[in-house]
Length: 114
Length: 114
Image 1 (cartoon, rainbow over the protein chains, first blue to last red):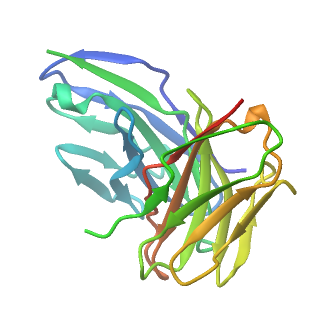
Image 2: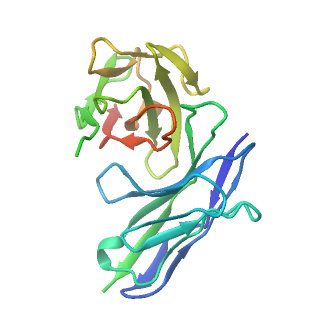
């Protein structure tokens, strides 16, 4: 079945450091790919998405490119802030059956120190 | 901006009791979902619902679980006889019509079974 693998956390960075969180997936067909963020004590918020190969999703300084050849969707940010501390989830959604459930990765906890 | 709401934010119940978790999806959305997240673990799909019936469910969603859309706005998850292992954060999500794949999540209900 479909699956998502993320780099193990926690990731601890200093403010203004460069961030990469790796995400790779296994899926039949051509899924849509997403990054969700969960701030402490809150629910899941959509951060960005890409629906086809070579699409780049971006939001709030974060970006990720849908790489079909490497089945990856790595999250990057050039300069992290303390407020970016959260858990980041990579997820996919299949297209063959619209309304198909999301498959989430295990999440990567990011801590940004001032 | 429209959002998914969930009540209550925290529910404490005794083992064997029935609980109903409530969600109000975004008003023009057509697909509804329940997910759960056991503390420190990944977000897991439970069930999806479309056109007043279950469209997909996971192996977690056994006979103890049921979902209902009792009126035009609410979407509920019922657990008939709670077990200790049902303790988790339960997220409701909704997504709009064909062609859009992101899911919008509510803030979650934390269920504690004692």
